[in-house]
Length: 152
Length: 207
Image 1: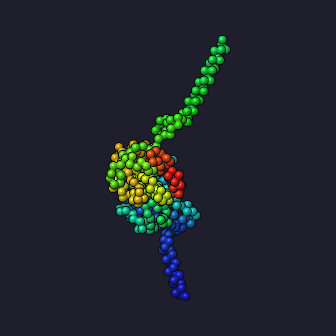
Image 2 (image 1 turned 30 degrees about the horizontal axis):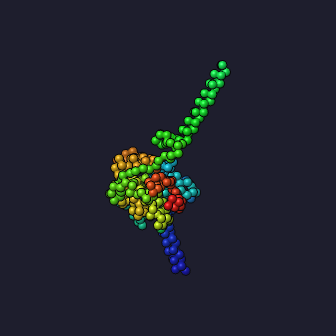
Image 3 (image 1 turned 30 degrees about the vertical axis):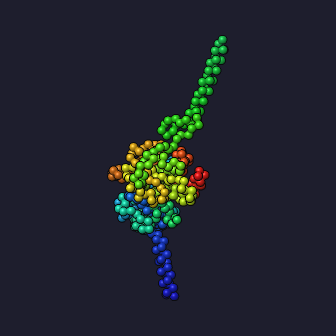
């Protein structure tokens, strides 16, 4: 019986590790990923899903050791012109899911110290107004990836 | 007599009004193009998109548009520091070409830099390989790039935040992918976020 409990605990721990969601108060950061930086460009973008099961909060800043600066950005589609702009904060509505995805909100990494290589990962710290700082491990997918799923 | 004069006046007035309507209608049909010039659309010619170019490819070789005659050109304008829009569009192009299988050999995908100051041929070489083996990266001097962007009616503008370094900027730009036919003439275009399957289907119609 003890052994069964131990196996269950190990399995549960493994499942948690495999999913690697970060939890701070009521906010869960799911599927954090970034695109591999293509070539010599010193810019990258990280995406994720922010699930807020509590009251509305605000993402106020980001920082990552891999880049000189990490900023919160969005895209404005103006006709057929895409304009990328910094935003001060990203509202994380309570009881809802806020998605940072290609073509929209993202964490912009500027001044990369080295290339982001596919298959590696790096820590990213997101700071929320109420929930405080949370650090997640961001998976680097291929340069043209559209999501965290593997595309072949 | 007086009646006759005023009748003639009325005819003239009617003619004048008719002329104004015809002219206004023509102007409406033609419409101003982005450069503010009136195009001759009412006379049956479409505004031209695209044109000849002389640029430098990602291997450092000078190439002209003439080198691609006989094949379709699938052209996207962007910059290698672009972390989201350009990778998205290029991965769409790559996925669409993969869906076409062998037929994709008839299409040359191209990435033309609108940031030639940072996008050297070496930078492009390191960039294009991430997306598709047949993707051709093109750059050049500003004097070479500006007329090409103008010919394709591509808008682009540097956006530098206050206090940022000289070479630290983003670029707003048109995110259209253009299909040019075997003669180098505009065939169709795709908006940003077109589904790769939709793009492949449309491309198939032209092949």
